[in-house]
Image (tube, rainbow, N blue to C red; front, side, top):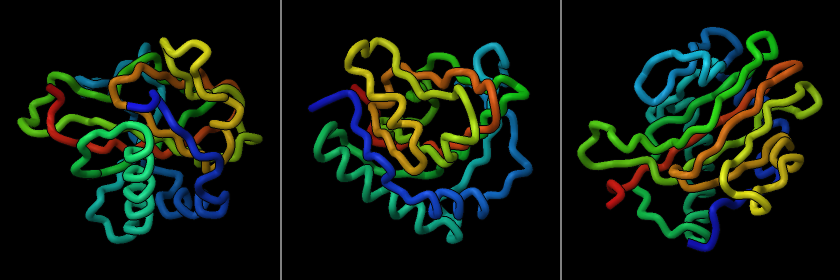
Length: 189
């Protein structure tokens, strides 16, 4: 492994980010859950929608994500990646002080006999001028943490191992949208 994260400033254009949000729509989001499937507002205050890889309306999104993940993985992580089944569109609102406290994306005790999440990706879909707060931050990295001002840029992607602890700080004004993808591979040993 050559690092604990890599990012690409504005990997997607603002127009492409907006097109994803328009396709997904702004209604019918559900409360985000924590790793055991429960809603717990002390840990997570966000709403989500899931898009399945089988949905042909989003084939372009999954194709782009897979190409980006393969490249990032080759250069930085060297994990055995097998699949990307779905992505999550997250919405963090100021009304709820939307946040997600420190967590990992790996479900160590999952019931899947073959796969674990190995590589996580977050892409900033919102224009940073329309909200305040809502920063993606990493725990335990110290000075090695990526620059939060660049991660806020619309279309910026960041890849990191799914076992790295991270969080989203409370949104204090406006609404932040993100796309999150998890690339699975054979179970960690």
